[in-house]
Image (cartoon, rainbow, N blue to C red; front, side, top):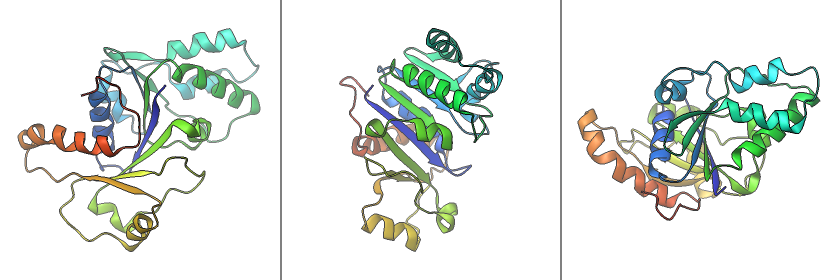
Length: 229
């Protein structure tokens, strides 16, 4: 596995669109999308039918005893649905924030084994339990922020990052940045990798977005597939 990219952002920030565009740009590498957002917009956008089995449901229904490792492998493979050539989707659903020791062990083992099968893993949204299980050495945080959310922006708390978190300003029109964001940039606690404008129409976005986003991707601290777009 080359990298895990956890994409965060407030509702309406364009986070899910960025996740989909990121997966497209990484083609033909193998990609696992993980929909960790409560609204499940990524699942609705990518999956022809909504999956009946989610990660949250799996963990909740199999909490009484620790199954064999072979059983965990089999069940986790069954969780993913194909959403394109070399691209699959796992929907988290309602995963509790507090798990028993058995549930946590099963989740850690199954998730670790699953993501090893892909070149890239892209998470849409932040779930504290999943976040804590992701390997630090391959984890890259990407925060999507729009001007509407400037006033409430703050640096993500919790674990330290091996890789500096990245930031994309979306729908940006040269507005002044909030003091908290300026301070984080100056202290190199976060790296600004791109500014995407607000496009006046979908036609204009279709013409220009891929190039602009591709420039952002080149600044993202992840190893790229040699044949990526």
